[in-house]
Length: 103
Image 1 (spheres, rainbow, N blue to C red):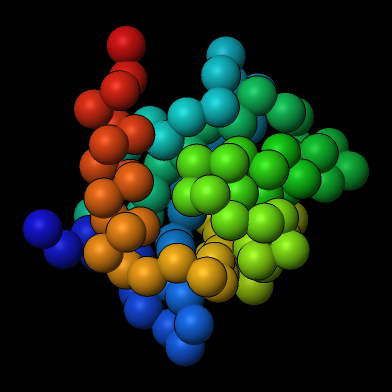
Image 2: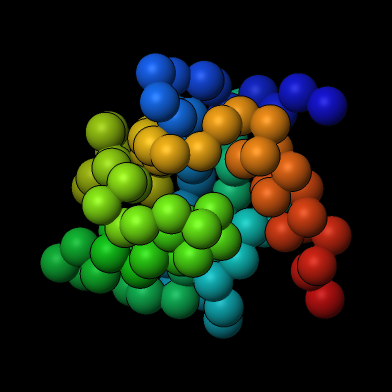
C-alpha cells in the first residue's frame, strides 16, 4: 500500500501532517488523501503542540527527537515534517500498525 502523505527523501522520509491540538490523547487518527491526521494533547500555544508532536513521532518511529524536523507549517495545523534514520517501508508499516491499535 502506498501512503500519499509520505515521501522518500535522502536519508529518511517527509510526512505531510494535519495536527489536531487539544485532543484527549496523542495518536495517529487517520490517513487522509494527502495528509496524516495526528491528534496531540498539547494546546497550540508557544510551540507546545509542535514540541509534543516531535516527541510523539520520535516515540512511535523509534528515532531520536533530533532526527525530526518541522520544515514547514510551524505555526499552522498543516505541517511538513522530515524524519531521518527511517525508510518509507518501515514508516508505512508503523503508520498502519498505529491505526489498527486505535480503540
